[in-house]
Image 1 (cartoon, rainbow, N blue to C red):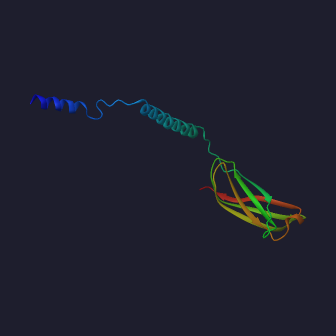
Image 2 (cartoon, rainbow, N blue to C red):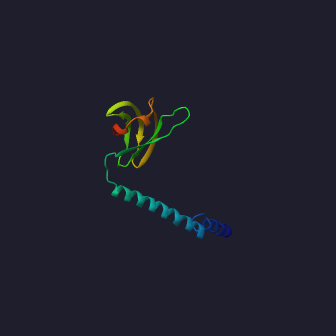
Image 3 (cartoon, rainbow, N blue to C red):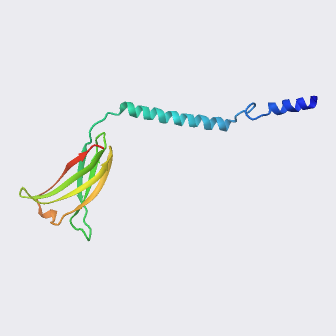
Length: 144
């Protein structure tokens, strides 16, 4: 019976978790993981604290981008420099000659998140090079 008690004590002492010392690799992984989680939480907290909400600020740029099948094609780039997403952005490009509008094209963009760029292309029937002016403007957008 004395031997049974000794083997029971030995088994009890060697259970997992009681004398389980962690090695250096485990502590290193724990420290790095903790550092990453805390830095992400700190970064998100800083972004939340310093973020100032503002309305969308949409800037339209356009560039000639002809192809064989679309010689009067233009590439339109919309940048949202504001602090909020714009939804259902509607852009209009107009060709004007002598103060009169010859033709216009429209481009719709579903979403333009803050600090983003969106691209699209428009085609004209008339040659924009024969016109005096090509005007681009944001017609409308809404907040999501």
